[in-house]
Image (cartoon, rainbow, N blue to C red; front, top):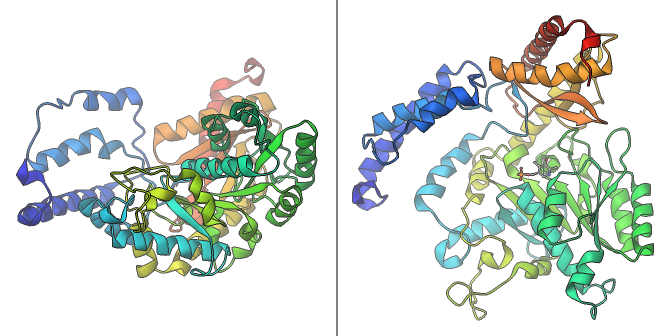
Length: 494
Ligand SMILES: *Cc1c(COP(=O)(O)O)cnc(C)c1O
């Protein structure tokens, strides 16, 4: 066992093992010929099943060879320029350098006595982010926050804080039983908001219909006038609006809700405003498009996913709050860990997690090595690419674009002129599946107004418009093949 542990007398073994791993990865990445092998679950599963977990291989080369069989050969490679499916990014090398230290030193960010300087680094990055949001300069501001495992977690924590504040507000009857008050809480979010809002409401014990879907406009942005009406209606019905969730970059369309107008409405109604900037958060580093999220500084809480538009490896996210005191709703004390009498900075007081990775170091080394402008330029580049892609799609007679891109997604479908909607609904999900099976391009799919669409999420600044063309050509070719197979159209009913 001793030989396998990281420590002063095993650093040689550590260094050679890591070097072998890096070599194997580099060789593999050099040989990758597309984002995916195209193999199915049934084809991949036997190799994984065949491994005898009680018969260790011992030798690093044998282990790496097996890893190639069970995982590397069929990994989905986000750095490949024809990977354009979900909000996954190729990762910044400085962040990978940080991973070396994060895992080996294994600091835990719950308490000072398990992290020391790590706590200070995380706090500086929280201040850096709140300053970019515009909550106020670090030092003389009450703004605060904490790193989390992802946007889902950040949204959950933000809504938990909002719920805590709603209980304290004059709108909730302090004398009423807890469950009765909870049943009256409402969360208002646009129909295009992320599904983690609904999930959070359930986790927080709110009513099954606690999330009120606010209508969006043709560009999938929340309609602030509708929000105003819904808030009035909630109150009239004896409900308590607990939070409004505005989205800065919806998952499908990258739509940015009108933050200033929504902030005005929230202010008038005295409701907590959470801005889910899991996707659009990268604009905080943009030198060209920061204005797109103007108004974000009026939020009570903000979600930023560094593992999306800051090119960080999973996981790296944060929840930021205008008033750090609101974090008290997750503050609990354990005698063994963070007793009431503790005077040292313990981040566990602000977090839903206890043991927690030092993910912040990845962003730290990224900023120290590349700088924020380079990160922002990466996001701006893919937004530019989406605009070019839109121009191509607009002029294409086989492919139909849904709406001009707000950030870096393109929602479109294969629909050569005259193709009935039902046939397009039948064919488009199959195009997506065919591409995944082919392995040379990966695209996503979604449903808009009950119809099937395809989606490109462009998050690779190294991809070019020619790569986008290649993906679109694959879509067209797969569509043609499928139509040949499914003639005549009339037979394809739903
Ligand atoms: C991705 C996303 C989330 C969820 O974030 P995870 O990091 O995947 O948990 C939340 N909201 C929006 C708008 C997103 O795009």
